[in-house]
Image 1 (tube, rainbow, N blue to C red):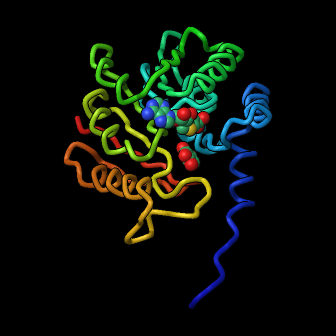
Image 2 (cartoon, rainbow, N blue to C red; image 1 turned 60 degrees about the vertical axis):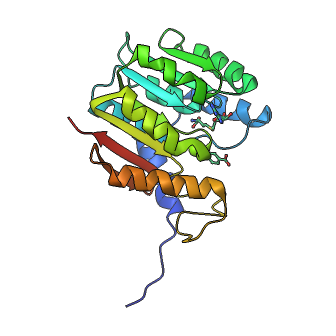
Length: 221
Ligand code: SAH
Ligand code: DHB
Ligand code: MG
């Protein structure tokens, strides 16, 4: 029997209110990002909280993020770290990096979070010297997702987690992975990334259909 699909937005609001309320820092950061003209593409509170849960589940002490923007997701994840934990986040835009550093300091996380300015495609290989990471979160340019996954497999320890935003779509939902023959190179790359994640013998993975889709994989021990 066909039935109407429920409108999930009230439930998303309920999850936010109940499990993922933003504190003043996150709320003010989001407001400042909007008035400063940063693109409106940060993860939402429910994804931030989910990343926090994943980090806690594996007792993460060292986290790698690819794509900082204003530091919103970095702050959610860094709050799951112990005091001597470390989150390294990579950002190609100097404006975004400066904005993020300011808010990370306001969040009291300056010692735990390092924003590295540059192209992740150049910054990742030297991070071999700082491995292993317990968790990686991929959220930068979609065309590079397959390449980022290969590097995360080198940098994240067995038993660690690799997660990625936009596994189903970008924020506008104008194009999605449901398209069988997408012309958009970003969607093609994300579909290639999802196939790699799903097919890798080194990973146990799934996409959680929250917001634009969060791919989550555990690295085999
Ligand atoms: N994770 C952030 C949102 C990231 S948006 C949050 O949820 O708060 C994507 C970011 O990736 C943008 O700031 C963009 O400048 C950055 N980016 C794009 N290509 C990149 C690259 N090659 N290397 C590093 N950062 C990149
Ligand atoms: C875009 C990037 C993102 O990381 C996202 O969550 C939504 C949109 C983009 O580049 O359009
Ligand atoms: Mg994203």
